[in-house]
Length: 258
Image (cartoon, rainbow, N blue to C red):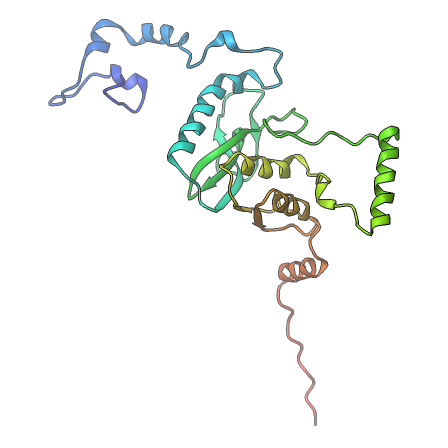
């Protein structure tokens, strides 16, 4: 089967037509129904390594080794340029599974959802999307929440602010982590998975926000994307977009003057 390629596995057991030369080993030594019994026990992964208690679902654990290998090889043969795109993609899977996601409007609306960073149609890196996870994607780390208690650390912080005021310097805002939601954090995580360089990431209105672009700038990257009216953009741009939706206003006719 590895040498002779067919459209389906069952095609290897089809009877050849006159004038067509093809091997008959599969038909001669094993019927198709017996191969189906064996095929049930063939796995492309080691089932003994599946961890039932791991946060990563079993389905993705089975494919994770192949996924990491493909991404590692892709990183060796493909050197990305400065302009990249991040988007969500669907792996078609119409059968039953707890990990499938339904995204209406897609060409393949039902399947496994992944977050991809790509260039010229080549997928460089990707992350699994987990529906029940707190941050929805594997490998996305968020800063720990700030504690509201004021102890010795709080007093130190007040002294630090007082010292900054005494010296006339303001505390640097760049050191503070920028809060992003689970979808926007995927963009930064994927960009940081690439070789260290300066990239310009293009996104759609699913990701765009002022916080995302500030976070990309903090990591040394640029960003461009379409925007929704409620994503925190400038009010003038919001008014211009609303005017585009309403369309051009009809011209008013002036009364004839006598």
